[in-house]
Image (cartoon, rainbow, N blue to C red; front, side, top):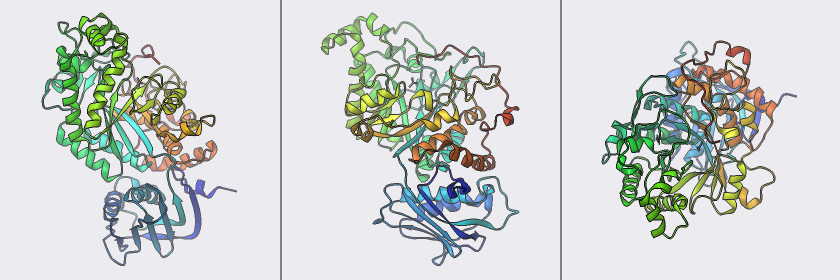
Length: 523
Ligand code: ACM
């Protein structure tokens, strides 16, 4: 018997779907009624549907499409109830975020053209009658976009946010700085973007590239995302992965007399921030500015892959370690992370960082476990909140298949199924570890993905699998594949240039010849 959820092919899969007979048709006469507190979701729905459908969805007190906030309802923070009958549509939620998730379900219930370019030949937009109750498994459902290695324009990032929202992903983690580029404007340090925002080439391709955001663009991006229920988590990498900053301001490093350029390679770079007072002042100034631009609770401080070679060689760093009573320069990493996180906490923000071991960051610190999933468990048992980001199942810069025609990426294949079957809280974990897991997210490192087309090819359809895993507690690969086949028509309508889950349809996907594979980074 076909599963009714499969028939509607919603991605991510809702908690409960009961199909009812009949349909309700939206047309140019359909009014939209928004109860108190539901106005923003109603405005968004109108704005999302208008370009493709031409539907005015005029505000009307007797409208048959109703959005209603029910603060006393048992929907949780992002749950919603959506009922479509032959008489009309009622979307209800306890909180505005729930309405925003329900709006995305409503879009997916419409014919796929509703997600596309203007398709006004159609005047009737049918919705199948259905009763859906839904809520997410995890509160943190994200995607990290590395705009440091290859800059992406704000208009592209807005589109990326729209694609996250369509899949009920609620966090865009923006990786703004790295060895290879610095994209964040900081008024007190203009060379960060002027010098650190340009690199001479990547992976030996001989082509310079550059880019940086301005503050107004980022502020508008935050608003665009917030309207869709997506929070932006900015990442400023420290104390490692900071060579672009050192290129701009060599005195922040450990070898001020040695000029550096933003790195043209991928991997782990020895050049890291110094540990003198001026560096901490720099970090505090940058974080103050980050706090002004990004209102969300979390700021990501990086913290990964920080070799201590330069600190071992530096008399100043060794002296700092001695003054702080540390066993040696390697311990400066933890000391550094504590110092910057203390500042962040004083700004009322929560520090977040990558962990390589599960034991390397001070508390309080929310951690992303990117190597072995067991590091997430270890961190949770030490009292950290954890976001599961293991590279074997969430790093979308790895190729999606072993096909030699696949565009190159990091060593090792991460298939659609690898992403789908990743359980952020493995069955053998202790309940106290499971309780600490906020959720999971996908990683899009961009050394090998310089353009929006390449990014979308890497992201889709694997991001759909991640969204399903993060939202739904139900895991059934075959059901997912069936839904994805239908969902593909929505992605196509949206103009998403992803990899087809049917390999024969990828024949026209050109491998990039100007980016050569490099040895794997540390993982
Ligand atoms: C990482 O991949 N170095 C977080």
